[in-house]
Amino acid sequence: MVAGCSPPDGADHVRTDGVGPVTVVTGRDRAGYMQGLIDSWNTGHPGQRATLVELPDAADEVRAQLAEGLSRGSDRFDVVNLDVVWTAEFAQRRWIAPLDETEVTAGELLPSAVATCRWEDRLYAVPFTTNAGLLYYRSDVLTQAGEQPPTTWAELERLAKTVAPRFGLAGYAGQFLPYEGLTVNVAEVVASAGGRFLDDRGKVAVDGPQARAGLEFLARGVREGWISHEALAYREEESRQAFQDGRLLFLRSWPYVYPQAEGPDSKIAGRFGVAPLPGPQGAGAAMLGGTDLAVGSASRHQRTARELIRYLTGSEVQRRVLTEGRLPPVRMTLYSDPELVGRYPYLPELRHTLETAVQRPQAPTYQQLSLAIGAASYEALLGRTTPDSAVSRMAADLREIVGG
Image 1: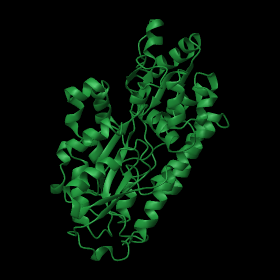
Image 2: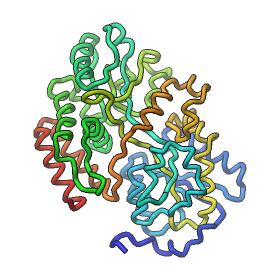
Image 3: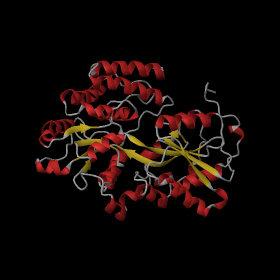
Image 4: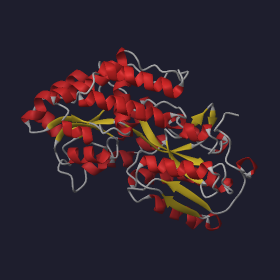
């Protein structure tokens, strides 16, 4: 057995057919919809009631609390809602229980989302929500300028340099503060240029011209001003607010921005659109996001936990994930549902983006990898080092982490 990967105390002896009350442990529910889903389950399952436990808002704190509880074999962690980049680590450490594929309807879910739930060819979770980056743009501004949404980096750069200033706007922004958001933004431009951080064997593959081209694209934007220095402090919410307040021509962000930008508090409702992220020669790569539902290895009511996961990933609940939670569902049929497409016209484009989205490295050491990628990239965006040097440093740091 690999050192540090032993099961939680007693987990090997926990029955997997236990029935009874369970907890659902998740990060903070910003949209306030999860309790309603749990209430609906409880109405139909009075003897197997579920209790929602919300952890802090910050992803790092959520992961730390989940890891602490699961590693010591707490049976309070029946169903856990994991960020897709945590599933590999939690599976490798045997903190979550493998699932029987015949018990889940994986064939009805987006294949890209299901792929985030596997570790060493076994299923350890079921996707609950999914996500992929999109390019938001001011459709009214582009129309007035006689322009179309950009499909390449060169077009994005030209429009951000020339059209945005004419309308008093900043050109382009993503999530460029050094945290997971920056890692995702960098991963997208690296993948769009044909690069990757790790190869299929888990060896470092980032030290090449593709990664340098991707990071140079972002660093050049900051140097030349079509990415404002203000964007270097943006996380998801700061960047959304800047776009929604009418201060940006282009924004890279997640699908949750769409309904908020169409809301009553938005200054750009009805005046924006979405498109695939651009790349060097055409459509670029979007990173896959979302969350996976897993069963804690020490849960004493694992049968109920699995049944609750099936409920939460069923069609009725997944519709509510979209309409109440404002998050992309994992059920494929919902993306062509006429009523939903009428309310959310971006769904067909989003499904295509999700089907072609790229996973971040599936590695138990992902948290360390992300920190190293973000730190090196931020130095390049600040202009403290060149993209070439930043990629070399990134490669060296990643080799130390993965050992090759």
